[in-house]
Image (cartoon, rainbow, N blue to C red; front, side, top):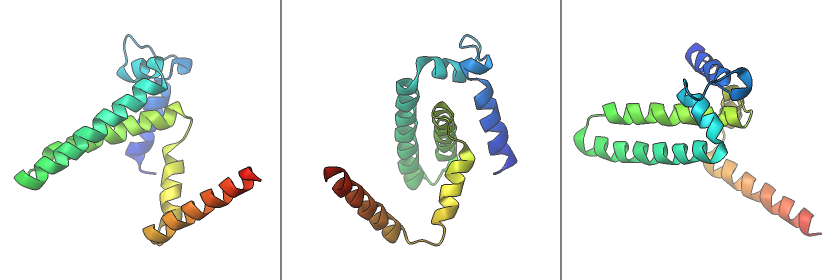
Length: 123
């Protein structure tokens, strides 16, 4: 994992209330204090802003807002992962696992797995 990503993940972890994070002094601690729904809402907002910035960049050719919004989206995604006890490395490991696998094949395999699990639970 990149050093920057690791440092950021460590900083986010340190902002958890259980680690002494103070919602009066830290935006991330405030998000943790508000809980899952606030964090997920923020990701939805940032995803929408990222899409809009991409649409604007397509027209203007200026990618600066897209980069800014994508950084916000990634940051808030890291906060979400920390909230659920998932390290960024776990996500990177999943991307590595998928490397060289057709997206179409990978999606079909997930559908097959879900279908098999559904059939097993219905029996």
